Image (cartoon, rainbow, N blue to C red; front, top):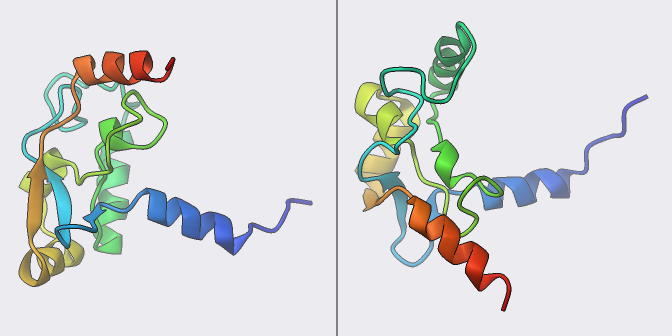
Amino acid sequence: MEPVPDPADDAGRQEELSVGDPVLGKSRLLSRQCDTCIFAPGNRMHLGPGQLRALVAEVREQGSYIICHDTLPHYLYPQAKPAICRGFADRYRTRTLELIERLWGFVEVDPPQPSEQHDSVEGSDQ
């Protein structure tokens, strides 16, 4: 028997994955595709056959968006704040993206860079 998920855990994850900037009142959108964008030519993230197509279909069906993997918590850049994938936003229009754009707008943020990864590792020893 599987444990019943605690709704508080989901709320924490949703907050953790929020692309909203509380100071500006806008949603973070990458200013350009990250270096390993799932939409870049060459399958830089080594996705399995049909995996990207299935992800895009699911997100479009939900009317949502994809968060850039480089900005996900506990990935390569822990200090990065979640942001909408530029590759997705440039290719697809969804209800959520249209609402965000019309009601609040976006604040463009640069993708995290390798030097930021090293800075956060060095800073964690102090």
